[in-house]
Image (cartoon, rainbow, N blue to C red):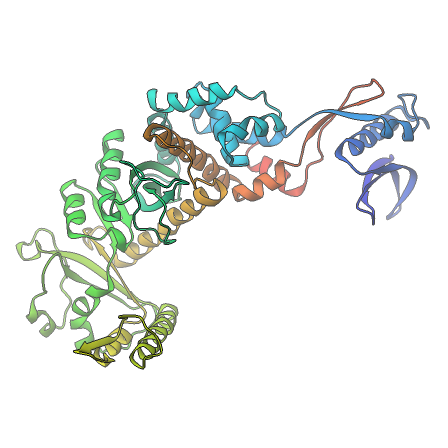
Length: 516
């Protein structure tokens, strides 16, 4: 077999380059070319080895010995060409290249690779091997985002992609908050409810995605806006942008309000939302009376729930659960609700309930100074454990409900449940936007700049979700695999050499899945 080059990691951490040949089942070292401590040195040794193999002679073809070659090698330029090509390829595949704005692309590229302040984006873009736009051009690109409505163009491209892949018959909705490094509030940036219990000014962001988590619509609301008041504007904007009528919207229990469900119904939309546990005793009362409160894993109760007010007291006297029918006048004040029991959920719920009970007892005994807690009833100055509430909550452990306006004839109970559990895709997208893309904290001050920032985050999220769906790699892993693979231009003693990187397994898989 002909001789070939081999790289070997040394104990010191350097990379040794050798010319070897296969003899039987073993590799025999013909010559040790040297050890490299930098990418430049490694590229020089590899290029020298390739030329040596090519000419088949004992001396280096450049007329230099190895020591002088490595010692005087100067890295003139290095680029993460593969990484940029992969991201630009995704950009073009999604149709975002219809936005003929290189500065906007560079802002999205920087957001994907190393989220940083816009003032530092030029440094990053240069390191990746591109000629960065001027800082004034970046500021102008932010203005163009709003002036030329880039978000509308990106959203329409995302819609086209989603229609051709996962489809848009099922849409998932959720909200998050983005806070600011600012002390004062304004008309948009306001202090509001924060899951992290922050007291900084913030904005509320609503995100609509397809069933695979690919983003379709993003909207910004005042920081003190209630979550329940965000879903209708976002869904209606999506409808109007794409002239859509027939789709199912899935959201968690935080979106559940009678007003929201009525509005979705009036818009001709179907919905599946999580039911609040406060509805469980009423919805499951008949089932518990006739079947007891002991349930098997996966047991389902397909019944109805009241839109407002109390249920029919006579309902518990009927063995059969009512079948929701929107055509029946008696069901106009009802929604269909599906309840399912899971053993794993019951174990988790009981653990939580026991912790809450112990906390209540500590408060009652005076060991904690909290004013109130669950399972405590107060009469005058006396506190005691609410045993009835505790027993009722314990009987509901493991149950979860789903409210919908889709009749059984169109969707089975199992399909309702599985559709709801697609929500993890949108929940996955939000952490990605807040961690991988570092959408927060935000440093912009004007509403237009904030909206432009969200357009960049929205576009970046679409590219990252496409790459994830295509390669199976998270954005972080993909960047870790491709960014170090640099094309290096070296000048050893006046001779220019360009060396391409050696692909690792992750890079091979990524490029193969993307069709490169």
